[in-house]
Image (tube, rainbow, N blue to C red; front, side, top):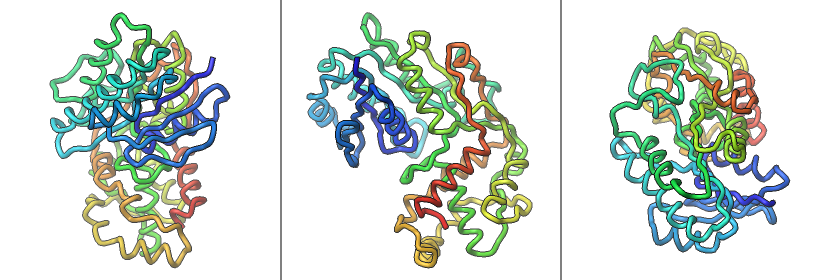
Length: 350
């Protein structure tokens, strides 16, 4: 039986890797939704440009997608405050389900991408390792509202749902406001161009905290597994690389990959110190023959500042997914090297 995936948010760091993974599987066709659309791959991937905040546009664009069997929801819209995130991010999910459920009569699964915000990790020190059955925290939190919507909507339906909870996701996709690996790569490249060592820019305590990350490719595999495994139906799963690290050990190794020394940490806002670096970035592109990527496409400085400000442990227990049958893992250090090499191969960094 052929599977038809509707990837909602197909152009982000998570969606890009998910589309590529699904397209590599023999029994899947992929339809990607995003505001910008994309380049189709005949017979494998079709992109649709849609405004998910507009219910009418969403219904119109999805009205002909009657063959969709799986919805993979990985879309996200940023807002200035946690409270302001709720309305648009819940509305987009509701609009998609409202549009696709009446027409896709063979719908079998709706997959929801979440994160550690469910555990309050963004608010400050939280219980570690976080587990899927940990008690909720005081709202607002759109991840929780989205899952509650799916749980209630699924009652009495033939389709099932799953929720994936990765840590910070590592991938090479550009134009995403939450891409830590790309931010590190550009920060290191600029530091090398200016002849200065690579300093950890976060809070002093963050250099010593215990963390974990999630590779985008690993997350894509886990997402498809959860959407197709009966053992994963109607459940949430933490998905992580499987190892833990501290920046105090990993940071010098990342610096060495770029041929840089790692000087002692110095707390600074990357958003502030990178505010005047766009002219330098253009000079670097000309000097090193790089791709003409805009500085905005490789700038995830507010997110990097946010992550480097975690002066508390940040990790979850991912054994539930292993008990249910998903056993893949990725070494975090090698994940970074792979992303850096891909960015260099694409001519994004020198």
